[in-house]
Length: 98
Image 1: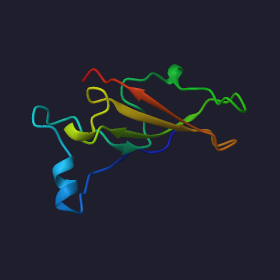
Image 2 (image 1 turned 60 degrees about the vertical axis):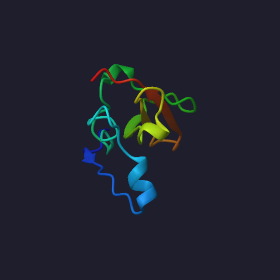
Image 3 (image 1 turned 60 degrees about the horizontal axis):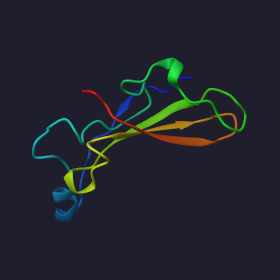
Image 4 (image 1 turned 90 degrees about the horizontal axis):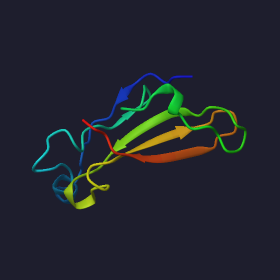
């Protein structure tokens, strides 16, 4: 199953939150958030298998690093997967090449 891709756009609500997002040296990092679609730089054959029921999991969301103060090991993203059969979830850190 593939969920349609839905781009997420950050909308910080406070000055503190506004100062937390983004990078001074990179305009792309911190903007690669989305729901559904296909995870960046992961092939269909690389999707995880559910540890409970052994079915292939569905990609659910990609969450980017927030900004320099909350960086995930050099601008990594979190890929989130769900098994719709048993509602198991799995998250993986991924270093994107682009």
